[in-house]
Amino acid sequence: MTRVAAIDCGTNSIRLLVADCDPVTGELVELDRRMTVVRLGQGVDKTGRLAPEALERTFEACRAYAEVIEGFGAERIRFVATSASRDAENRDDFVRGVVEILGVEPEVISGDQEAEFSFTGATRELVGADHLEQPFLVVDIGGGSTEFVVGDAHVRAARSVDVGCVRMTERHLVVDGVVTDPPTPDQVAAMRADIEAALDLAARTVPLAEARTLVGLAGSVTTVAGIALDLPAYESAAIHHSRISYDRVREISERMLTSTHAERAAIPVMHPGRVDVIGAGALVLLAIMERTGAREVVVSEHDILDGIAFSIAEAAGADKRRV
Image 1 (spheres, rainbow, N blue to C red):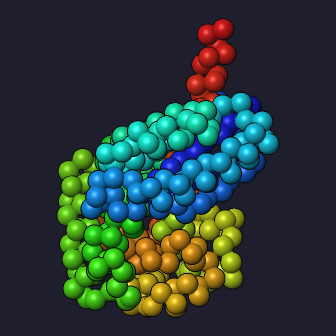
Image 2 (cartoon, helix red, strand yellow):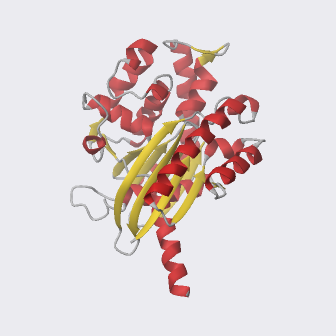
């Protein structure tokens, strides 16, 4: 087993997984998993730049993660940066800050690489499960982009498209710097049209209709699951591998898009950083289920972080074999 630290920095949040990992057996023993909403992608869709305050929030989280990593004595670290930092003109400022704090350079990966990591992390323990048909369609609904991957034991096709909960909120629901609360029917319709266009784009590469099991990842999906399960607080063990019906997703999506900020914030499983963006995230999930005809979504708490962790352990094993 190799002790690794995997960091995934997306548009809305930065997450850490410290684990003992064996890529040969597929065993992963989680030691610490945490998430911080930093909104690194704040305004990127309009300005093309990472905001100074967003960078500082991200660096503050990195400092906290550095202490955790040191405390567990992780042998190797991999820091993967996704949508927001791919798009930003001043991403060098971001890279420099991460190197100073964590001692590793963030890898700004492509959407296809992001999809591969997500698929591996989400499905490694699902392959061979009797109650789930293959191929899987893994959808990772992030802040700035959504990844679609179809595969069974291996990836067949993958595509990343620029629709995520933060990007859709900022593009369609923000007026004069303020989120419309709740959004108007016209705003929701415009957002839905954007999502449908992105699904058209994804379908050119990924055979969405061939999938037999829909697996949903990331905070928008897990939050919808927590609401569907009526949990009194966020409970990862209850959410992981829960199966949420299309009818419940539709009901929750409509509720999130017609409720006020205060009403959404009062939901027990709602993270404060998701209150303003959950409506867009739930709508993305609903549109995917309608496009694919999925009657349910299997929710996974294992995602890109787990895929990154396996990649670190595999690299460590390859290095040992070369010695």
